[in-house]
Image (cartoon, rainbow, N blue to C red; front, side, top):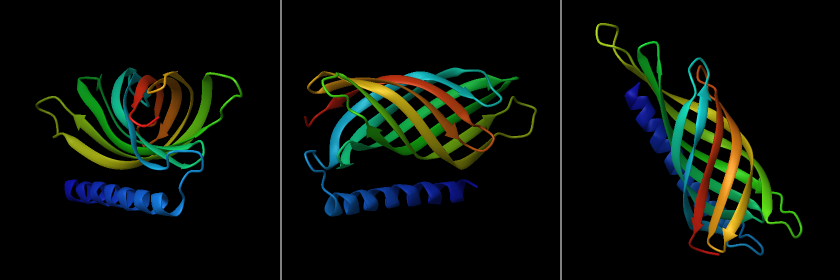
Length: 184
């Protein structure tokens, strides 16, 4: 299982990098900055995984730019861990979301909605004396919506609600965070 999981991670990362280059060459963003590293941010919030208690989730994300106006590519990494009946369940996620902004004329708050795919590395740690620990790599579908506010030319904050469809471990998330933009 670990060999297949490593291959799947390498495949997703490779396809993501190659498609980013293809999008950058094929569709520069009008009135935008196009694709490329434009910012870095952190996220913190609560996750409510199916069949377990709510817990804290941590993550980092990259603003990879726009491939069309108001359509942002957001690669991210998230992690959470929760105890369930003497065992621990954790999820390390590598995901890429596409968010569409809906700017309001004259408004500072920008609503957005989006979705994407994530590779979830789920690990089940069991107490000593039980059958061994297990891990599984699963593909998940993410959907989210939120509001962001550019508080300074190079600093934005956001709050969002999302749901990840992952077999056996669907997850409701309420997250907030910031993005520091190097290009603005």
